[in-house]
Amino acid sequence: VNMARANGIKVGLFRPITLWPFPSKAIHAIGKKTKAILTVELNMGQMVSDVKLAVENACPVEFYGRTGGMLPSVEEVYKKIATMAAELK
Image (cartoon, rainbow, N blue to C red; front, side):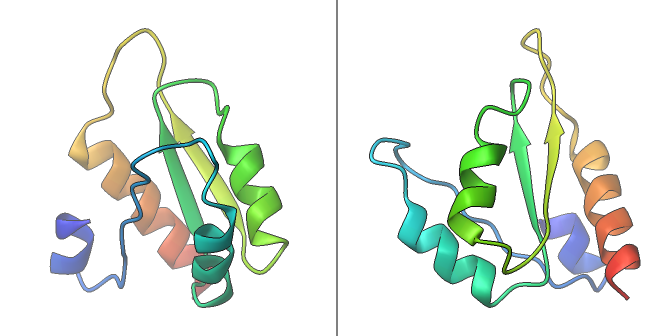
């Protein structure tokens, strides 16, 4: 997020404290006022479907994930954010 902001991309971060109950209302509100949502997960995308359901097609939802305990680097996440931002222009 910091790297994207430093490069002029308007981004925010929503990090839920708990996933049960799933924060559908909060995610829905975010989806109504953003151009796109990126879910970054350490799995094969178990949460992205729930985010898509909560957003109700208000904006596109994309996924970036890793498995095997490998954390994505800041640069990898930034590259995905930058690609999404360029596609939205």
